[in-house]
Image: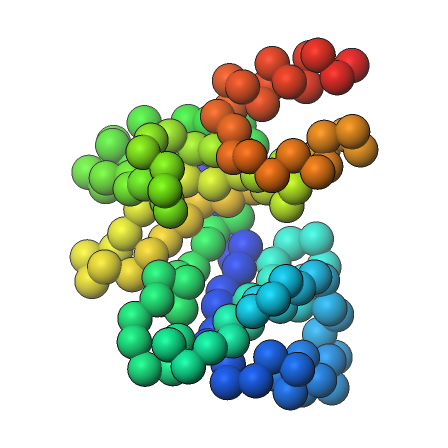
Length: 154
């Protein structure tokens, strides 16, 4: 099921300084928001997330003990059954109450989360094609809702 690295994350003290540093290393800038920035490790395949903040330097934050593995869309749809078959429990993400995989249209990806035996956050993740008219959808959607929305947009 796992095809490669999707993303890894690091805490940083100063996002602007870190952006310049990683650009100097030759990593291509992907996007940023207020306290995070992402750089391509392999463009279109894997990236590095940088998280700014003192709280990330001194305390636990799931994004800083986190690895996302790249999978296909079809495998992600089957991920809950696969995890169950190897006796691994999926976990909820953020404020979500469902463990089911979900779509992030605004980011062009989909995920399901689980933990390793030490409590490190792990994720199965895939890229998705998002029609232009849906790229600003920030709501996280179930696969069922996403696929219904795609049918409506065609």
